[in-house]
Length: 141
Image (cartoon, helix red, strand yellow):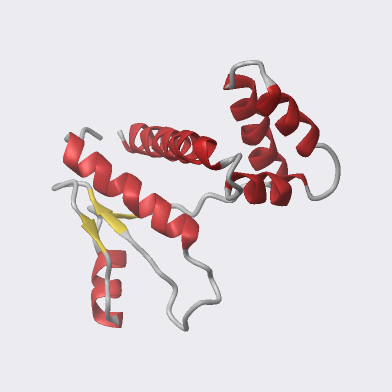
């Protein structure tokens, strides 16, 4: 499926929202559909709107990507590999070993010494989501 840049950004934003949405946060799950005719994203707010989307051949539900702990850990390791050699990279290499590695990594990004890396990590995560979007859209045809 071909979408323009603005539509792609909207779709990538929905993937991020779906990733952040906690399944237990409300009685109604947060669901989004892509209209394959227009490239627009629909968030049905009522049962009737949800039924219309589900019954429409042009409305494709957004997938919920299940990510393993190992997947996320590998992305952290790949991110560290992109950093220039130096004290910060050495510190991160040590930090992400053993139990609790992802928690320590996240905490490090919120410390003063790790704050300069936070935008780089967020950009890497955004790039990962955009790759998921591209793969999903290409699978739609």
